[in-house]
Length: 458
Length: 165
Ligand SMILES: Cc1cc2nc3c(=O)[nH]c(=O)nc-3n(C[C@H](O)[C@H](O)[C@H](O)COP(=O)(O)O)c2cc1C
Ligand code: SF4
Ligand code: FES
Image 1 (cartoon, rainbow over the protein chains, first blue to last red):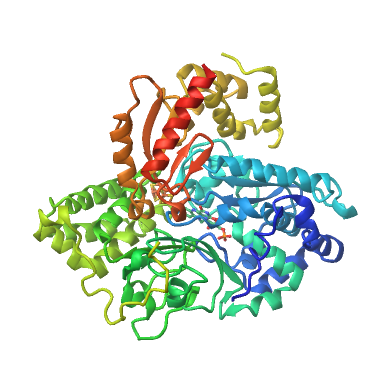
Image 2 (tube, rainbow over the protein chains, first blue to last red; image 1 turned 30 degrees about the vertical axis):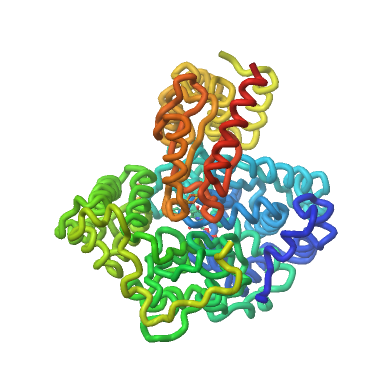
């Protein structure tokens, strides 16, 4: 059993409410921080912890905090990114639904460290019922003196508000999020200036993911050094992984980043193996934007070493033979699944979510979607595969925000690793409508995995 | 068209979350309120009303309302089924759910039943990929959908509608 720092108590009866949360040691980090630490000392602990942003990019959190501009007389803001819309990702939802006070606690400590007297949670509009859960937790925290004026006699005032989005993946991008919070369309801003200098209402702002801010609680309680000893290398602490697709036990798992991908997929503690006794074909290990890998490259790196569930190991081999940890959205495809179809749904997703500001992204995503649909429906040409490759290359790196890259990468990786499946669609226009290409040789040289007793037979 | 006194108080509370002069930030939350209150969609009249409440130009409201997928710019049925069909849900049979709803109600994505009761839409990833297939219905998610579950959801909606009338 790996260490759990965030979800350890998420299943205690009544933990969603203040009394149980407090009884279980909740809000200790606020006491420690506000009574015994300076804001800079908190940032220092976060730096020492090695915590990297859990929203997808993995940027060191302590470093981000230390970049925050602090001009006299101008307010600073902490904004928590709860937009969570990357396909495959549903971990923040879980944390907010089951243990909302953990986020509020982390926000109070972080707000103190950053000097944010008003902090916001920007939550995707579809998580409508979670707004109520968070607002209840905020009200309870306030009634018990953890929010409001002069918290614990420290002289620090803080309020937290929840802002509901209205359906737009792009509002997860931090500058689009800020635009949206200002009541505008979610068009990403050109950087620089970065939010740390010019963010919400032109004031210095830190945007962090829900899980990142929740992790501040154990960091303050146990110290940055202790946190940094969990995990491996630059992958410190624990990571929430949301696992979905064709597995026996989809759900949210907190892992210590030393376990192997194979263990994560096949162990009963985590995904419990491939559903219905099927074999593993492919996996997108870090949310829809990161490269898809065939089974053989997923479980072992190109060098034949075991691949682990951490930032470095998942990206071992670069985009040629590796992928990324991304947002921790782990999507598993079994042998019956069609990679062309799956990639098509992702291309459609990115076309739908493009804000339309840059032509490579606006036009390119729509074009890729059309071509992929044609290939999927048996109406594609061989030259379409190269055309797709060219389009994605022209999008990547040529846009205002990384959504363009996020749209390009899944298409590139699908062609890179599954080109034969695309070609098979083109060569077998009738057959591809009736059946899928199947496993081919993607799983070699990995042996078909044994399925645990009882697993997949239900 | 007007919010109740209580709703106006709520609008005031929302505006108070932001600094002086930043009431435009209240636009998304107030549009949600308006959509819920005035028939499940945003007519030009509704948007103009919201503009007047927040001291915005109507165009500022239209710009925003047209950007976000949760704002309905056309009337929708009393019950809106939004079935996610992105990759992870597709892997778990979301297409079958969309087909089954067609079989049951005769509506394709984007259509509303003749009695104005149900609208079907497809949605992109709603953050429930591990509980697929799924749909959003009002404020809540319905997950692990099966044909039987779809049947009972439809039943439930019809019952609710009958008890309201
Ligand atoms: C298109 C796009 C969507 C994103 N969506 C999210 C999201 O839903 N949640 C999130 O925390 N970060 C998201 N990000 C990353 C944010 O821009 C930002 O890097 C992150 O919130 C920073 O927090 P962190 O350092 O704690 O990870 C997205 C980025 C892009 C380009
Ligand atoms: S890359 Fe796409 S989503 Fe990002 S700003 Fe450009 S058009 Fe908008
Ligand atoms: S893909 Fe359907 S909820 Fe994520």
